[in-house]
Length: 571
Image 1: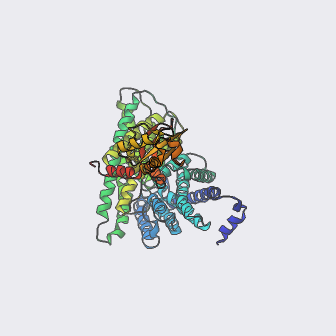
Image 2 (image 1 turned 180 degrees about the vertical axis):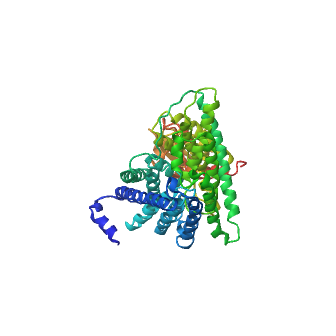
Image 3 (image 1 turned 90 degrees about the vertical axis):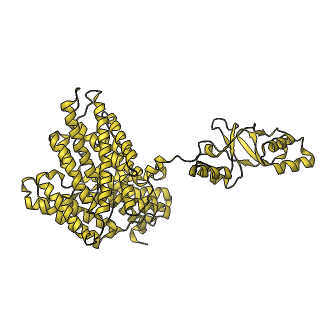
């Protein structure tokens, strides 16, 4: 046993059960992940200062060459030393949950930290949030192995670390929790929610201790000037949704074209993309790096609408090239940048030409961030709460809900998969997603049950009457109500034998064995019913408010038939 694991067990923890130990470990994961993400931000800022300088100190040659050199160095680092750090951090974490029992090699953490610090710090158009997510999940996987968690707990520990990483990166705990539940865990599982919350809070506490408690952006006050302004937000939702679909299709097309032979080109592609960023950065330095400074300027109305729109579209171009070329880095910050600039441009135009009073363009910058994020990543709850956490304004909830929902629905209707699902399939992986769960309707007991057409037999029914009813309906087994919500089953053979023994005039309560069976309800999922039917041939389906009212019956054959109908409705 490793010394940290032994020390962990000596600290009066044997008295704690597995759930309590898991919760305590979640806090440790949040603390370590938050600390490492703080170091990650410091590394990016330090490399950016060294490579690009600040303000007037940024020369043309340095601006032109730094992104190219950083892209090449970071890509070679991943290709030759840290293969596990290649690809999307979100998909790597999902693969750890669903494929590798929570295992993430620590080389992935080291590689992400070094390669992304270099690529983003040198000015390439990518962001630190996706790498921070994988850094957190990698720390969680390491600690899980150190403390010898069970296989099931190891599967749950990766999203705990992922939440800590992204919460520390955004400095928004609720956003981190929602994103991991929507995109990483791909389901709303209460079993891991408590641990995720603890890790997010502890990671944000560490981040704020070292980096300050200021939000990611300083947001001015917001107010809804006129009710008609909601129409402008709806139009921005349409524009954001269409733009998100274009962006995803462009990524898919570029990745397909750019990764075709010859193989030697994979060494040149990052440099070419980095050089393109440098060329763009000479005239538009805001598009370099994560771009948080430019978003902050847009939020304070320091950019005119032509520049906002130009920055948005140029950022989209250089981001497409950087990501498709395989330069290490994330897509969250560029998505926020693009949405902010396009939203700000739309808001500025509305302020000039809308016939009714409108808010300042900064409000549209903020809503635009969430709108494009919702359209690309298909995480509507995350995008809404992200804007709310950043702005701390209840007034903005209605506009952001309208705009984000429209963008999300347009994106779903025009693009077959979300951004991360598309990337996973391009890399040959088929990972579960909440998007699939939203599309599916679970088969329920009401889809499989046979409707009760005859009154239910009771303990007072005569054996002879029960035999007649079974023969009339062609059934070989039926249910008997015992009252007070209690049910048992009886077969035609059992009743026939009782009649032959001279008990035809007896009541079922005197003949039928008092073996109770569980009740099912129409809204229950059939996978739950199947587990119960493994021990019983037939079960009653009753009302939740009246357990003595028989709505129908269900058998294993009925459930299999309902699944067959879902696969082929013509059956």
